[in-house]
Length: 382
Image (cartoon, rainbow, N blue to C red; front, side, top):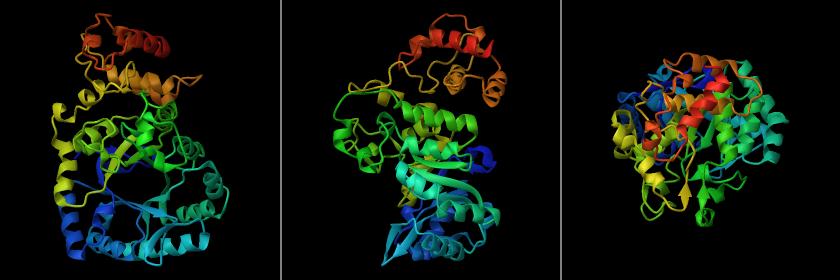
């Protein structure tokens, strides 16, 4: 398992983590056995949005004797009514559901208190200007929530949350299909066939700006919908007309700025094994570029994907990192100190570029790398 720091929380999380969907409608013994397998593979991070009491009980039992070794991202505003999950903005229902969550998990806190599913600007204002945020901050002050998070499918709203300075972790829907689409408060557009009917080019700028802002400010992103509800793994359902592997999807997400972990909803140990295969996968098995670069209606041409195909550089420059750090500064009037220090720590810098062009012959996305090195050298001063 590769471990990453979850932004400014300082928490050390496995890059491949667990969603909760796969544990639904299983016995306590089945859930325990699957947690045993995951933990044996180094998993230490769980997202729990579900409000189903039976599921919460099973997970609480599975973690009872190892709670301190596990990081839980528990959702607020997710309630159970009339035998089904509902999202709420009612503060009394939110408080009752959070008490239920802690009790059933047999714990006194969650590491990430995730405000559940905020996609519209109106809903954002309801949550952040009203009693819900006040309740969440009270729980944080009492130590029952260590860090505040928010889940969203809309990059504009996610950015608004990050800019409050209160949110340390964003749970965001991220994969190469969704990255092509403009922001929307209608989550169904992410799955709609008509969204992919026309030619689409490059990552939507609002999404790119979100990832870069979070990377600069230390706001961690953990990823949901990495497989697009399974569509990306299906030759029939993939908008690209060809499937990606679980390892390729996870690699794509984990190479975006600010992303610390991918929350994978696995229904079986075999599905868990396929996702955890990322940890031991070769560079060739992780490589998503060939699946994307040859597509006719979907193009990332000219856009650095941080994939590393440009290596090795004749001067030893880590080109992908230089491009990433430059992009983190591009919209800033001043040079962010954290980005400057990360750039300084590189063994070789953009000014050392020999302009030999060998990297450009290897780039699957046609990036003008020599020019990008010149821009970076000018921006950072060396």
